[in-house]
Image 1 (cartoon, one colour):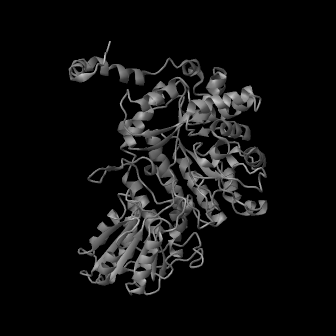
Image 2 (cartoon, one colour; image 1 turned 90 degrees about the horizontal axis):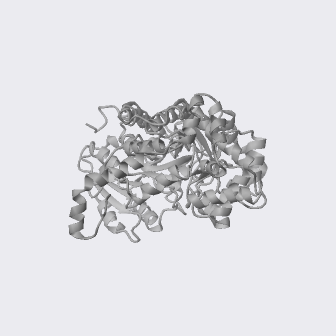
Image 3 (cartoon, helix red, strand yellow; image 1 turned 135 degrees about the vertical axis):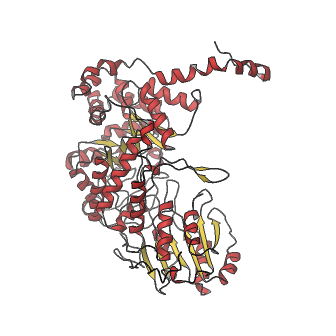
Length: 614
C-alpha cells in the first residue's frame, strides 16, 4: 500500500517506494475494463450485425453517452493527473462514444488515444478540426523561451487559398493528405470542409476558412476536398449548416442572425451543402445562428427542428451524422443554458453533442429529456445507430489502435510538405501593383529593405520564415516586430527607419479566430501605413491573415494576399515577392470597393540574370 506523507522526510520515504506506487497508476489507466459489450459482440465484429448487437446491450444512459463527446488535448499528462482521471472516468464509467481532439504533438495524441481506446468498452470515434491539414491541430508548438519549433504534422494553407488557386485537384490532394496523416495518429472524423459561403467581409470567424464567396465554386472545391478526405479513409464533415458566411457576429461569443430570404438561402448558402450531400458526405456540423426564414422562433439552427429535421433530413435527404458545433459556445448557451440546449438539440435532430462544458450534466439532461417525454428512446436509438454504423464502417470493432512506429512514415511526409508548398505557391494573389514594384528581386543585392511584421505577441512564428527567406536575397534586411496587443506602438520610430529604406514591406498577421469579435485593424496601425504612403515610402503590403485588410489601406500601391501566417505561406509569399516563384492566384472573394472576384495580377519568375537572388 502506498502512503504519501507530508514533509521532506515523508517525501524521501515515499521516493524510496516509488517503484511500487508508480507501477500502480499506469497499469490501472491502460488495462481497461472487462469490455462486456465488446466481448459479447466480438463474434459479429466484422458484420453489420455488430451495430444491433451493441445497441441491445446498452442502457438508456449508455446510449445517450454515445452521443456526448468531450474535448481533450494531446498534451502529456501523468497517470494520476486530475485531467487524465477525468478523461478515463468519462470513458470507463460514463461510456462516452467519441471525443474531439484539440491541439497536441502527433505522437502524444496517438499515444493518448490508444490508451483511451484500450480502456473503452466500445471503440471511440475520434474527431478533430483539421481544416488546414492535420497540423492544424497536431503540432508540437514552440518551446519557450527559445521559440524552438517542435514540428508536427503538415500545416496547409486555409481553404480560401485553395479557392484562389482555382484547382479542385489540389483540394482533393490536400484532403487526401490530411486524412492520411490524421488516421495515422488515431483521428477518424475530420470536421472539414467548411462549406460556408463567405459573402460578408466583416465575418470575424469564417473568413479564410471558406473557399470563397461564389456558391458554385465553394461547392466544387468542397466536394473535391471531401472526396479526398474519404479517399484517405476518414469521414468528412460539411459545416456549418445552413451557413455561417453572411454574419458579422462570432458564434463563439454571441448569437448571429442571418436575415436572408429563403430564396436567397436556396441560391447561396445551401448550394454547397446540397452538393456535398449529393456527393455522399458522411457528417454535417450545425450553425449556432438564427435564420428567421427557416425558423421564425429565432432559435439557432443547432436547436431548430425545422432546420435539422425539416430541412436537412426531410428536404435535402441527408442520412448521415448530424454533429452540433461546440456546445460551450455563447451562440446556444446564452438563450437556454446547458441542460435545455442539450434537450433542444436532440429534439431538433442532432446525433452528436459536441464539447459540452460539463459532460455528466449533459448526459443527465438528455436522459431527463426522455423521462420528461420531450423525445422517446427510439429517437435516441436513431442517433446511436448512426454513430455505431460509422464505427463499423471504419473497421474500429476490429482495429481501434494505431502503430506509433508507423506514424513517422506518414505524418509530415516530404510528399505532403511538397503538396502544401505547391498549394501555397499557387494561391499567392497580387491584387494591386500600380507602381510595378513586384517582383522585388530586381532590386540591387545590397538594397536597404525594411520588413515590418504586425501580429499578436502570442504568434511566435509570425514573420520568422518570411524574413528568413527575404534575407537570402537581401542579407542586410532589417526586420521589426510590432505587437498588435500594444495599445500605443512606437510607429514614429519605424517611420524614421523607413525614411532611409529603399523598400518597406508591411506584413499583417491579423486573422479571424474563435475569440475575435472584430477583424478591423487598429486605427494606429492604419495611420502608420497611411503615413508611409504620404511620405512616399510606397509600402508593399502583404496580408497573411485577413484578406479584406485592403479596405482599410486602399492607398497602398502594392498588395499581396498570402491567406495565412503558416510557415508554408510565409515562404511562398517571400518567394513570390522576390520573383523566385510565379504569381497567378485569383481572388475567390470581392474586397469592396477595391477589388472584384477573379482579380489578380500575373507575375512570372525572374530570369536568373535579372534576379539578385543567390
